[in-house]
Length: 247
Length: 307
Image (spheres, rainbow over the protein chains, first blue to last red):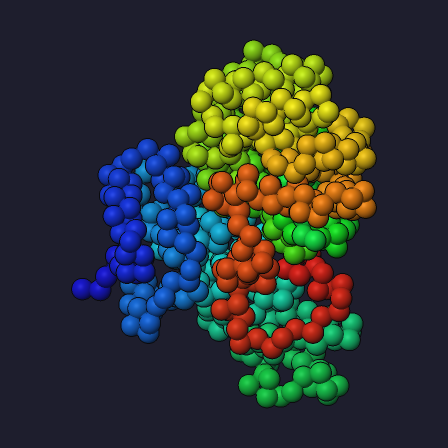
């Protein structure tokens, strides 16, 4: 049987920090046994002190196991302390709803914690209850926090409504984040987003600025939508856009 | 020369200050939790303030190439609002272990009331439990006695003087502070605390051991270049370079480095993960991206997302 995300995380963290194996095991056991939330907070605070902040070292088999455990989940680019923090959260047996505990953690998080908390989104229980908290993260002015949600994370694809999805894609463009690491760009494409993106491209062109080719991934399926097809034809005629970019 | 400003309330300062500080040679600074100029009346606003200095302000500083650390604590003025104080004390342990928190502070006395005394002691207890240094704010009024009393209480509570920075010293308090084995901070804040020229005289008299210079720049009329200007004046006045390096850099690093949260490598040779999160964005995700050619103004804004 495939391993769960928590089992995978535990294996990776211990393999990479064998000297801290006892601390990891004891901490997780204590938290899982229903220790007060204060113990969880201390474990979250101690994680980088005990384990350092190196990147998690994963091979192809690990990434495949992650995808099998939770389709779309990619721990690539996670740090060891971040992995431990998400793991601690996953095993903790709190007596309050998960979303309430998550909110408390987010309110007090430093930047690295914020990134870890949001990268863990696809793994948490009752994911639909975390929608508000995710919106708060998307509104962050810190690019890496925004990208912890938007990039390589199946949560937006699986849980965002159309409005939130569209505004995440648009914000990514505005802040210079790449679009291609956003999971679900093709599946979640919609006529409203296509219209917004074409408007955005026209604004950029009018200001003499280029637009990224990644933008057209979410437009292609609506190439012939009357709301935008005329504008796209204009753009091709004026040399701003190539036919190939829309195919 | 590289400088550390170990007492700067950047939440009250503009980006011009960050730029000027970086240009003057400040590589790292410490932002102590403080009284923001008017009382907070909700625990929640205090919590959000602490969250700002451990997260957002740290990020903002990084955009100017400055490493930002902070201290967390309940300041002496707001310790007098018991309801607020109780609430803050509940949240404080949550913040004390955040990345870059180098001390409990600034704590101590303002009017030397029983409530100030109570929360000073409780926070010294917390610092001891978490093995964190302590930054002590000494009172403006009845200063000499308040400073002595602050040190008495630290000793009484069993806190090692080597873990305590007594800040806002002046000519009247420094001898006792040094003699009792505490670190002696000086805030170059001419109207209420200490001026550059006076500071240089003190360095002539006391040398550089356990003396720390800071700007304490905040919402009042203060100078974010207090450390760099004092260093310049000291060098021009013939103070040995080694002494200036100690009081404007090394001593702060040694004192607050005892937290385990502040190392020279943080700015000289930052870990890749810090580069990504604080300085460049996620290089793994951005690895395949063409280098962006940015105008100077854009480069300065760096990762700060302005919409």
